[in-house]
Image 1 (cartoon, rainbow, N blue to C red):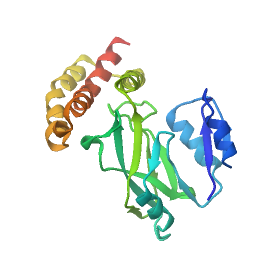
Image 2: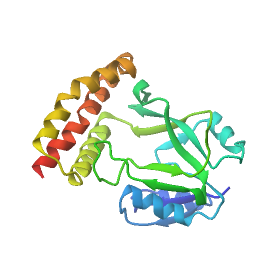
Image 3: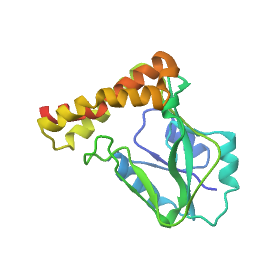
Length: 218
C-alpha cells in the first residue's frame, strides 16, 4: 500500500510529517475541491485508490474491511459519521460515500448542496458494481462552533458565487426552511442530540436559502 498526500500549502508540519512517514507528497496551491481530487487521482499508480481527507479517520472495523475487501467489485462505499464539537451527530450518521475504487474506473464531479455550479461537496462515481464496507469513516470537520461558522460562511459564499437565481427561488427556499428543519429534527434524529443537534439542524435547514439570498446580493 502506498500513500499519496496532496498538501495545499499548509502552514503546519503536515507535508514534513507525511514525507517522514513515507508518503509521496506534493504541495500545490488550492484550486478548488474537485480540481484537487482530479489532480490527486491522476498521481495514483496503484490499481486501487482509497480517498480520505485530512479530517477523516478510519475506525478499526473499516480498516479491516478495506484490507479484506473482495476484488470482484469496481468500488466500495463506506459509512461516514461527522462529529460536531467532538460529538457524533445522528443527522450526520450513516452517510454512504464511494471512497474505495479501482483507480481507472472512477471520476469525481461537483455536487453543490444548493444545486448550483460551485465546485465543492463533490462526489465520486465508479463504473461497474459497487459494494458496501462495514465500519465507520469518522469525520472530525468541526472541532468547535467557531470552525463550523467559518466553514458555513465560506461554503455558502462559494455556492452563491456560482449560482444564478431570482427572487422567486430565494423566497421558495426560505419557505422550505421549516420543512427541512423538522425533517432533520424528527426523521434524522437531531432532536435527540440536544443543543448541538438543534444548532446544526437549524443552520442546515437555512443553508439553501442563505445561498440563494447571497446570490441575489452578488
